[in-house]
Image 1 (spheres, helix red, strand yellow):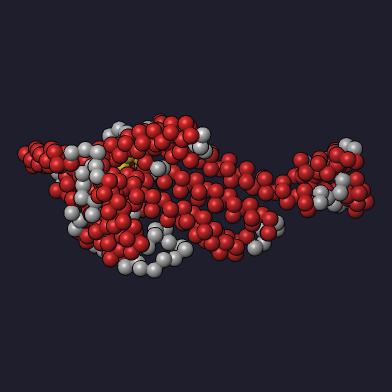
Image 2 (cartoon, one colour; image 1 turned 30 degrees about the horizontal axis):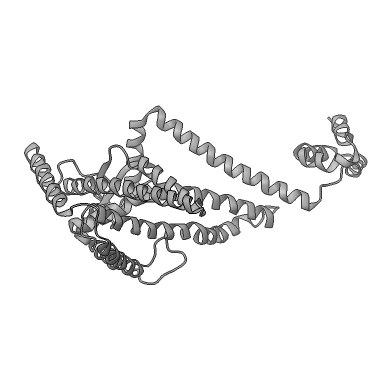
Length: 380
């Protein structure tokens, strides 16, 4: 073994030794430890193959850590896709159960579960949700057509098309994400929340606590659901996961630079990791929430809902949360700021008018809603 190590250390010309030391660093270090029992051989090995300078070691360490983080993320993503393809129905049930448990709030110790199909709350949320889903698809189609017209006009003027193309691509991808059948779940959680999850596509979760605490009108509930569907249209959940993975990789890279020995890593992870999350991940979360507000009130407008309900619903949410001051660690913009913005958007949309006869649409949807609830009671 010693002879093999000495031969490996001695092989190669002088101008390639630093590169070989970097590429075969693990084996070289093992050989040096093996030869350390003979001081003469160890000093000879160091004279033949010196340690690579720091300005070569640091970039290699950064590259190695970055590749490791990216590989772990892609491996986990591929494993999740494989698992889902093997048993789609079983995977959905497992994910729904895990989400219900993670978001459950109960002062009575009740187990997390979803309301049955004949529950009045479930019937109401599903009826409003289906109407909002149709309005979301109409809004996406209308915005896509508008952007296509703007793109053609910009081409004729010879203007920069990058932003328009990106936005148009996002809307076309969003149209695919909101296609298909959706599931509306009212849970028995006492929490005041409604959400969608990138782990469980085409599912909207609404807590029973929100419906009891805020008592939203049909139009206010519609804005709440439209806001959540907006996250799906623009893939905010998926991008949030990507931002989190990038932040975690950046944290590893920076720690590998400032702490090559690993002694301070445990202490710095608790402080630097939280700072990086607040500065990068939570900043994106606030931007996506503001975009979902804009898209949500646009969906209300497209679906012939009362667009004033957007600001009134947000005022209820702000009052229930008790949050007033803005902080750089917040995941959502301040409620008062959101209320004022939605009020301005409602005025602008009212001045624009709508592209369809809302009176006839509302009457038709009300008849369909009454028919669906009546058939549900007869079935029960």
